[in-house]
Image (cartoon, rainbow, N blue to C red):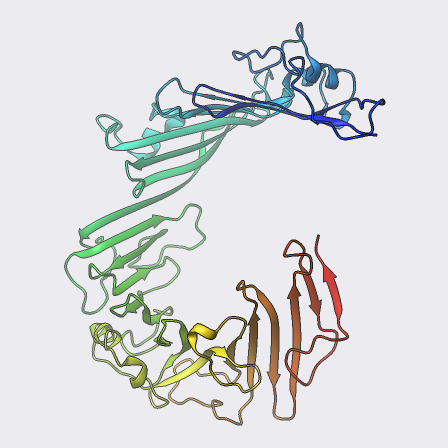
Length: 455
């Protein structure tokens, strides 16, 4: 039996959807057995009350009658629900047409409920829910410099939620919070904020890294709402700070409330990360804890590792070293120890590299050295040709989709492979995964395994 399912949308003066009804179905035409397009039916929603966001019960219509008759019972909880079988939005009467009110489907979430859960937005009043007083911001004469948004809606008996945002006209600097208020309590809030400054000095509560002084080209700060760390001496409480020393961003450093000291990133002239340190709380802030990245001639990462026995006299020396054109050649087994290596365009038979313009459908290989390194390494153990290594081999099809993944685990006594295949047997609409059910002696063996098809 054929059934016609219908819903409707009404647009406002800005061409945006203002009313979106729930769906209903019309009884099938028993005299027909073929599929027929549903014709326009004015009786579906003949009248809509824009002032109250509802379907007038005195007028009704097909949609109203459908839910009032008991159809769609799983969507009806209150006697008034048929009049609110829709979602409703309004906008401020202004050229921008910013959202003003949002009501969900059903009486409890509509405009008529005694305990409203409608979300209302206010772009004009800075004092909503005490935002001006709580933030310490003088609202006067700032309307042209900052944009403000306040939204609030009921969530339960005598409980109201607030979301508020203050930002500059470019959105880069601002203050926001989520808050809630019950009938008997004051507003509880969780603040977060962000700021962006150029050609400015670091805040007084932050200690510049060795060799850094004067104005920074860029300082980005974020107030972390409800953050879990305690105050660390010399740090900005719950504020995370990122700074760029130069205008090209080749030397960046950052502060985190959970760590003492600063993390650093050094880039080359192509803006590629060359050195970085994510553990700033080491005894020697200049020569310890640095990682490096190597690249191939097409700027694809080829090696990640740790610097060994490198003792530069200052952090600025790492910035200069990162910009040297032959850096990859300077990083040898004497001063660096690889952790991950990547090989691209690998021929699956010979193991050799193919030309870059012939790389379609060939393999990317990622190697991981299993021998652990010391916290402050001075040598590079377990990187010889006979030492165990773990590998992941990725095989792609002509569309760049991962077709085969073979995990290789190497030990002193055995080589174990486990291959997973992903295919699209129905023209790319349905994916099928073939997964290993036993260890294999070679890569990319997929016969005799289990399979799973996603629909």
